[in-house]
Image 1 (cartoon, one colour):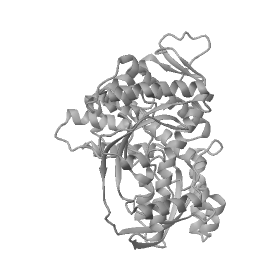
Image 2 (cartoon, rainbow, N blue to C red):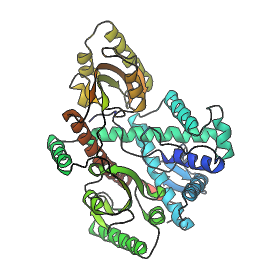
Image 3 (cartoon, rainbow, N blue to C red):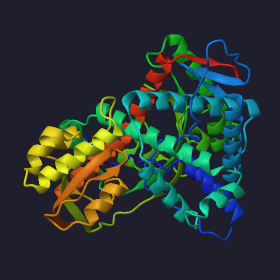
Image 4 (tube, rainbow, N blue to C red):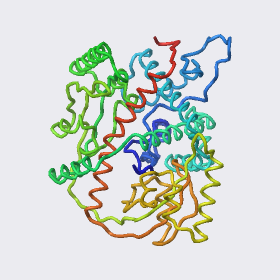
Length: 461
């Protein structure tokens, strides 16, 4: 697993919310483009955990999550943000109690993930948050200094916005670690994907899809499955009666993109969940499927649009190797920075890069190859890593730099022009499998987390 690869996800919901609000108030500004940082689709991350002191009355508490509480005031703020986000997409609002439950459920998931991140030692530096804020300002067509006033005009507090963004990046980093630990791709899977791509001859066709998911718990009982089946059948009946798909997703879906109308973005056929791919390829834009069952629950998938292209593109690939040091429960951020600096000094003094990577890198898949990442297409890595590589000539090594995965040292070994080479096809096949499986892995992991957590609702149940 290459831990610097990006998940094929859309921009963070938090940032999209801001952009849609900004567009509504500044119609002359160009529409924002998606950010480069991958992120799980969520509502804005909740505010900092508020511990419930022994004997404290739970008045004003929306939910208890392990030893933390979500306050009713926090929930009300997030519901208001969700209402504005949905209205900006011109999607019908569900009933207030339905929207409140959807938002609260996602806040609970966020809170559990932040607790997991804390226990694992997953953090984000001020520099990383500052870089993300700078990109937000640039895409909102304002300077970083103007951003607080711009947010204020849209009813958003700068300090809270920055904190929510930090929490989102932490959750993103945590999920990348989970994928690194749990998502494994076999050589047989890679060979099968390559055969499929060669057989279809249409590997560049992209599908814009949305889904409604009615989730089942981890290790569901027959009663759980029956209840989920009943709910998805009701939703399917509403769709057949004319209910808008996006509105139904907002109201009923348990998917990570529920509050985005179920929209999971553009995907190649090979990047779609295995359950969806054969059906989507036969659909016309606007079509939606009958309910489908998977290990995660029941799905209804809709094809929004399709783009077909068989054009081959000549790209400049970079052959690189790296050393990654990431924080953990036993290695603080300061210790990780000190360790990468020590490794850098050893490399400058003539130490063997491959040996240091094998002994010290926290990227297990490349460490066993002396840190070798093989040939990388442009955009195959996260922006900080790509930027560091782009500054280097073959043979040059970077100073230590930080990404959402930790601290890196990268060395460029070579560059080449490539047009559908075998290595390029393998990389695309690998990324397709990774994209297809990552959503399933995260959904399963979240189900496990929720099942093992203490959750007590004080509203909406």
